[in-house]
Image (tube, rainbow, N blue to C red; front, side, top):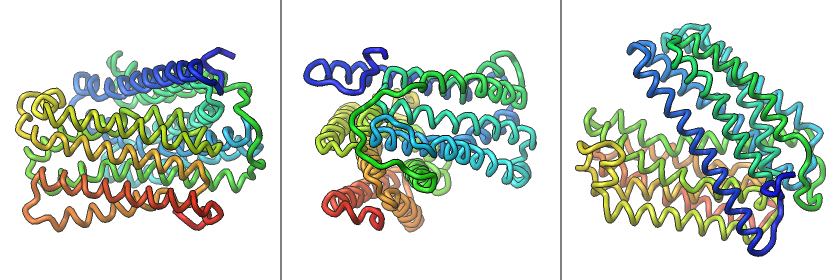
Length: 417
């Protein structure tokens, strides 16, 4: 086993190893984001407007239907950490069912999506094949995360980025159209999957066995809970951007979209902390939640302070000189992302603790924000982002209350959030 893969460290050596692991995972996440960004950039230069619109729609659908892969990763990581690195007997069956259900759901919806979005059925079928491979890879990422083999996890994350986007980038770079690029992507995905599985092969013991083996039904329920939470995270963090398109004039909606870049930066920048901390959450490490929330809160505070001191510069970097007029609102965009980032730490802690409905505050916030935005008198970008910050703060508070209740009454987790 590579030294960086060792699951446990103590003292300065442990802090150094964890720091290296965090750096590797951060670099891997950055590489994946670069690949994801390259798809629309290349598409804009290689495709006509109609094909570019089709590709954008397919990418959006793909982001939704691959959510079960993230849920599968979370559930498997928790199970592996609690079981001391031993896989659940049901993990293969649950992984296959989750992947086939994801791809199958897309195929069932394909006739309707093809008609509503003017997409060829063949493109949706290729996307379904790609989806199955991506979701299956989530199981292996969960193995590595739960075992705290973070160096290999970073490599596997990069390979998963290649699985999701590399084939499309290669196809577009070669001058292929949308259908051919998706075909290349599906082929690359299935060729890459064995490499991800090979990286996760073996068992890295991460401590004593603290949990009884889970059944197929139990693991399936955990995957469903984690999927719901992941989807809720996406919904609550994007609902304001969607409603800005509906409620604001076109130019102001565009400016809001630029401001949301700061929101996403504050939201996802510290997520490596949650990736590293989840196995410790699963093993009931009480100190890990304090360290994780402290680190994420510090990151958020730095970003909010920076946008307060240099709001115009932040907006210029995000969208260009034409958007500096929203500089006064830059701290609000950053604050929204920072608050949700803290919320997501607690949601992951609830998932690790076995809570049945950790996503309930997030879904409630999504619905309440959507309703509240419709009631805004004379909606403006400032009022909408103000409502978003208030909603994020209320969501964090509700999730913190749910977490404290779960800690005080652990036997009530099955009926709590």
